[in-house]
Image 1: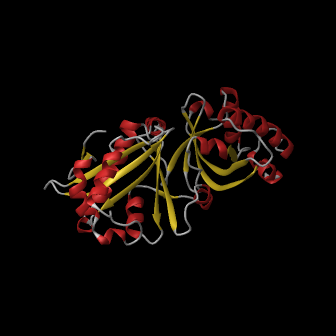
Image 2: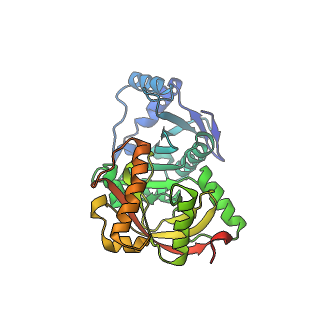
Length: 329
């Protein structure tokens, strides 16, 4: 970890020596209006900060990144933190003393952390969980282009009934950054909305054939294996998301918008949906044969066993643009 500077703030890697000053900040009752509780003692907080100096979970799989926020007058005013998981995914949290609310310090500090996560730690997407009544925190996340997760995503991550899950893919992630740069070079402007990068198939031949079906207008849906997404901590697609669809070379080929998302057992996929997905002869029999083969390969990759009740993510989309000359008809 390193110290991060913004226009008005300094984010310092949190250490035990910060405990005394942070104890004062974290004893502010106003910041616990919606959740959590203040630290019980200075010694307890100091011990916790000392434990977090390892920057790693006990099993070594997670990175625990904590920064304290310092103003130019040298006062500490809060903290930002991230738990980074394998695969470039992170959960974030933040807290700011109430005396400094309303000045943009919170969004400035969180954005600085997001930039650092993308640049230095390879984080591609982040999420935050907040109480539904915490409108201040929700406004902060919306300003930073977080989007509300779908009900299915809330259920998958077992979010409490009185909480919201908000998601964002980082512009600094290598795949999204490269795709956006390529689109700018091609003169392609994206419509408003959260953006993600995705592709089809697990081979050059399959990718090429599926992209061709989309361009022809036959394919308007795609299906993924939920187990594979969970294994990689990948967020589910969201209704309204803009997708930059890349080919097997990771070059942007198409731009689509997601219009429907449903998670259901493999065996419950309908003939109507198979026709919308448009592969082969468009029948449910072909869909099952082709997707059983694909999901079996995915299960082998992540150490699972394919079954009739394995959960699949069914996404319906609309084609907005064909951006690659190689894929234009």
